[in-house]
Length: 154
Image 1: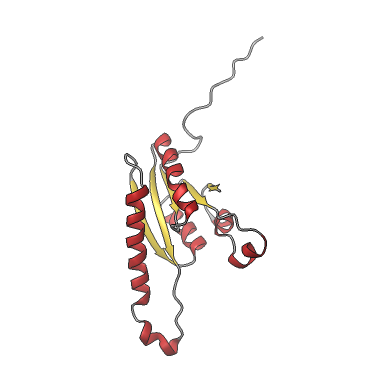
Image 2: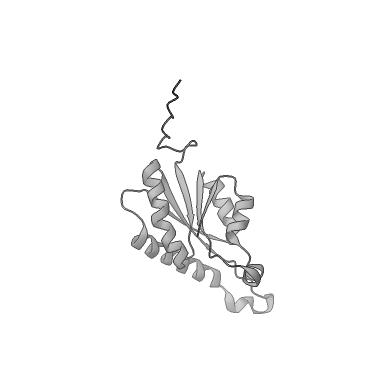
């Protein structure tokens, strides 16, 4: 008896409507956007480009001098993300830009939940050894805390 193998579906087993793409404007994240866009096109999904600005901790004794600094950094993040999206966002794929303040891994996981992302596509810088110990791995932390599947691209 001959058994005919079933061809794999072009659609993923789980619905993929929204793909979250965290970007930090580095070379790996620039390469990531076209990759995520190809997935979005294939599955008919939209992209959410996310940039996270670190929270600025200012000592109380000099806080008066830093009034508005976080707002300036946030505005700059929004401007850079808009420019980044204009250069790299694909045509024909609905793209949303989001800027958050906080620890990158926490905000990525939080945004994935609030934006109802079905997938996170994140780049890794590939740090190893002491560099990884000192800098930590955002991708690794996202993997541990995300409520949806995570695709790590190197």
